[in-house]
Amino acid sequence: MKLQEIDKTLYRKNMNLFIVILVVSLVVLSLLLGAGLIALFGATPVPGEPTGNFHLNLLGVIFSLGLCSAVIYNLKDKPFFSEIYYVWQLKQLHNRIYRKLIKIKAAAAQNDVNALIILLFYYTSLRQVYELDDNTLTLPALTQDLNRLNAQIESLGLLLSPEQFTPELLTRPF
Image (cartoon, rainbow, N blue to C red):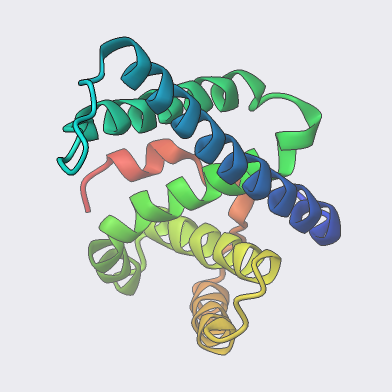
């Protein structure tokens, strides 16, 4: 995956709008689908006793999650979602790298070029996501890690860049 320049204000605006629409959609659809299922299959309420329709309400929530997921899947390639989808893909890659991070760091300490490329991509893309999400608390530590890695790469006389990263590098054992 190649790193892209993202307009932070557009990303934040689209992300906030997306979250609001998603939450409202989930709430409204859950209520409507739950009420519809209760109207079709629900028990007749007896005054003073529970209705026993919890499972139908839960099914309404599950159906609304499925419906919203299907809509999002079909809209993910639209221009409105381009920044959101890009950051989502980056975060997925971060999770894949994080699961192997101890082994990757150990290989990088042994000057493994592939491990160095992975770490360079990881730190650079993590910095981009932190800046987009205004996560400034851990940014100094990340900058320190990135500076150490760049110093190591420079001391080895290598010319590496985050653009050299491919997800296939994560499939090899470390």
